[in-house]
Image 1 (spheres, helix red, strand yellow):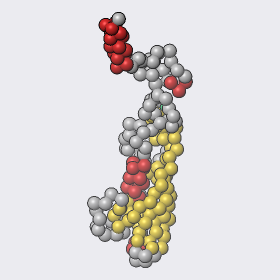
Image 2 (cartoon, rainbow, N blue to C red):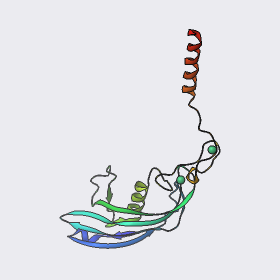
Image 3 (cartoon, rainbow, N blue to C red):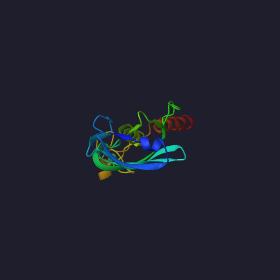
Image 4 (cartoon, protein in one colour):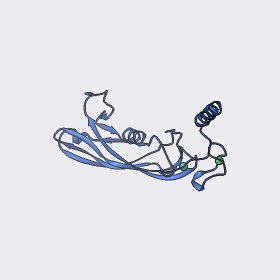
Length: 169
Ligand SMILES: [Zn+2]
Ligand SMILES: [Zn+2]
C-alpha cells in the first residue's frame, strides 16, 4: 500500500496508517508457512523538517527449528522505525526510505523490517537440544541409547602412553 503524505511535506503533522502485506513471496528456509499477513499499524510524523515512520507489524509464522527440525507456531512483533527522505539525498543508506510522488511505499517498509528482523537462528525453544546425529532421536524428549562417542584423539594418546609403559618395564 502506498500512503500519500503530501500534507506532511508542507508542514508538521502526523498521518496514522494500517496496512496488510502478503508475505507469501518472501521465502525463508526457516519459515514453513505464514499463518497471517504482515499486519502493520503506526504513523508517519513530520517534525522540524524530519519525516519518520514509527509503528509495529505483527505476523504469525509456522517456523522450522534449526536444531531439531520440528515445526512450531510463532508470533512475531516487528518494530517499525525508519527515517523517510523527501529527496534523493541518501540513496545508499539502506535505513532511509525515499518518498516518491508524495507517497511512502508501506509494503516495502514493512517487508524490509520483517526481513531484517528475522532471527538468523530459529529455535523451537532457546535451549533446544536438537537430535542425535547417530540415531536421529529428539534429545528434548530425553537421552537416546547411543553411547557418547569417545574422543578419538584422547584414545590415541592413551594408547601411546600405554606403549611407553610397556617399553620401560
Ligand atoms: Zn528444536
Ligand atoms: Zn542416538
